[in-house]
Length: 229
Ligand code: GAR
Image (cartoon, rainbow, N blue to C red; front, side, top):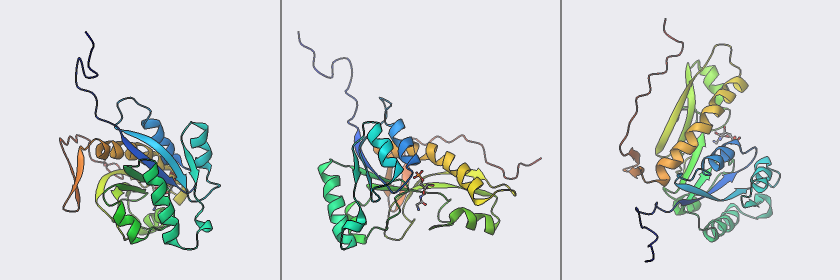
């Protein structure tokens, strides 16, 4: 007697195909790609695409058997021409979700709308605080005692959109912007794979411009900064 593919249990749901957009170092891309190697992870990496051909992350992806594509925005006369090509590459790859990971090119409303609720970004602050550039120095200058990072769906305005997850870290009085960036980046590498898993598995969905998380369990203690005596 032949066995059906689902004999002995239900087949796992298909993994979501994710394309990662980068512009440089790509350490968040590495965190996502490494998480996606786990058999039970709900997403697989279709490709890594950089708008800067010299991005170090492209070499890492190619060396690790991931489809690595350089799409130099300077080769296109207009933003929309660049985005039309990017969109067609993403479609040909069977992309279901996009993860921007240090992708430093502004996208127009046309592209953002086409990928609405299918495009994630990570930003190194606790949004809506400190959107944009130079976020760590601005956090230090403001004297905040807690900083962090945010994974969110993308909307037209930069660093806005429904928040999937955030991680907080302390800010120390002795911190330089580089010290704080390093502490936040370590948190980013945990947060982004966890947030993508929530979305790819369907455990988190956008409803009325907020991300609703099903079966939520959060027993993490509060982060005190400075530590209370
Ligand atoms: C990360 O800190 C990411 O949060 C930030 O760029 C860095 C990229 O590092 N993104 C933004 O500031 C977007 N507004 P990586 O290339 O090593 O992942």
